[in-house]
Amino acid sequence: MQLTDRQLNDYIDDVLFFGREEKQRYERQIDHLKQTLVNALQANSSLRAWKILHAGSWHKGTALRPFGTQDIDIDIILYLNVPETGRGDLADLHPLLLRSLRAAYPTKDPNDFTTSRKTVGIEFRTSGLLVDLVPVIPTEQPEGYVWQTERGGRGTSLTSPEGQLEFIRQCKARDPRYVQVVRLAKRWRNHRRLHALPSFAIELLVAHLGLTQGVPDTIEQGFYRFFLYLVRGLKERITFPGALGHPPRSACPVQIHDPTNNENNVTARMEPDEVTALLHEAVVALQAVNHAMSVERRGDTEKLWKQVLGPEFSLSR
Image 1 (tube, rainbow, N blue to C red):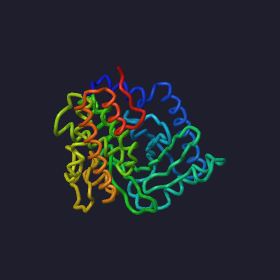
Image 2 (tube, rainbow, N blue to C red):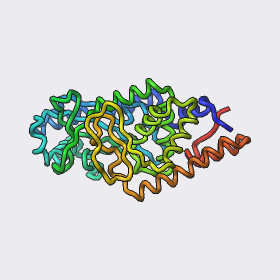
Image 3 (cartoon, rainbow, N blue to C red):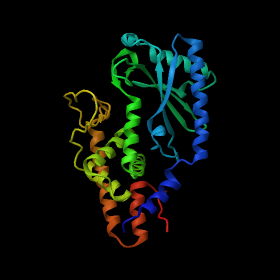
Image 4 (cartoon, rainbow, N blue to C red):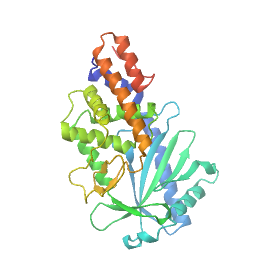
């Protein structure tokens, strides 16, 4: 049986969606972290964060409510008071931020602090909150863009966090089902443990389908065509109108580019075996959803959708 928007929205609201009070509780913790970090930077370095921007799925409205072992990932962009011309001398930027965080939270387990290529992370185990701090250096031109540095001074990339947020805002305005399809796709990714596929890539894939195929008539149709696109191999290079630059020549198996700068491949770190696993799981999911749409018994339909989205899925009356 085919599912109505109401049935899928009931599942999304009951299982995947953040309630207002629940979200406010996390936002208070995030606001406290931001102020603590500002104070720590002032006390431990010459750096100043003249602007702090929420980014990522949380700010875009596509984050999933945590359950089981799933945590909440928050991205916070730190606009630093570093001259643009000095961006090449920031090999110690990530260690400096790490030291400032540790100074701000001296009683936390050292394992709660992490560094990656472009971020410094802190985990709050009690609430399940994972915060990635992204240090950036604003540019004079183009306006609204920043240089994002890599750990150890190994390179910089030009992007626009505000432009990315505006891009998603336009997707939501254009397609009233955009957020629901993205949430279902992320839930499938998490359920099947396909963590190599970034959340931003999912948001861009759904956006690409909306721009090239139009707004789906139902949430189910939008979710179905997401899998239909994946099983075709992800061989198409995906870019978006209005982005700066041109995509570089690349051997990356998947190429989904930043909607603000074509030189940035959001999926550049996906390995061939990870892509193979993703495509295999997409075939399995597509078959399950297709079968669910054709069976008549409600129980059979629900069972098939559980294979795709996990045991928490249930159909409303």
